[in-house]
Amino acid sequence: PLLTISMTKGTGVVTSVPSDAPDDYAALRDWQTDAKLREKHGVKEEWVKGYEVIPIIDIPGYGNKAAVVMCEKLKIKSQKDKAKLVEAKAEVYKKGFYEGTMIVGSEAVKGKKVFEAKNIARREMIAEGDALPYFEPENIVMSRSGGECVVTYLDQWFLKYGEEEWRSAVYEHISNPETFNAYTDVTLKCFKENLDWLK
Image (cartoon, rainbow, N blue to C red; front, side, top):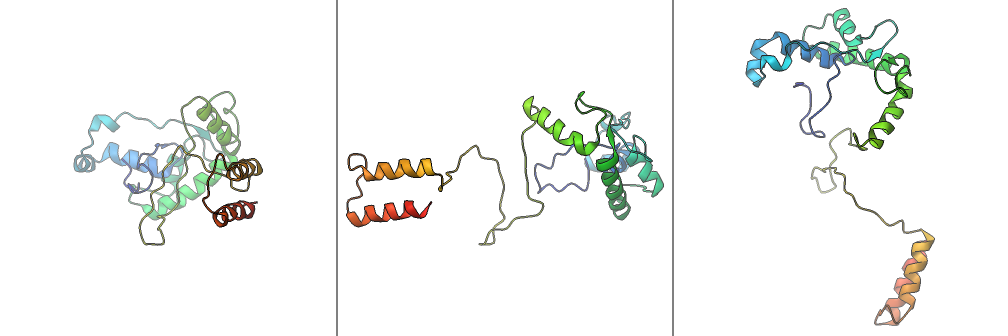
């Protein structure tokens, strides 16, 4: 568990990358060394003991465990050192993204800069069925009526109203008295005017 995760954003489930995410490294270290913290949250010692930091990205000047290096450099003692963790994260993420080289992954990813590898890995995971595109808002989204909006993926489609093929098919349908009955000429005229407006 990472104490800084918002349970109201997304699923509340995130990956943990203690080699390159200072928050994750600080949290892992807390869980491994703080028996009272584990007891408070019902985390068993065997769930966290014995896990080592697995290198993923090599960053010039930071090596392949940049989060460990930054936590030591800034003397971050725990995941409660929020200001220092923000500073560490900003530095590690920027350096890692633009200068870091992937040391794990497929042959298409390994050896590439992170900013190049990101989209390759994304495409591979989606193609293999290991991932799906996911988007979420950065902050809470409120409706005009004051209700909190929930974003979800729906497998549905939308009409592109200005698309000529669709518009022509509908126009042909409503113009044929055998397939469409508007009951009055005024109503039929309104339908046609609206379709013309959608161009």
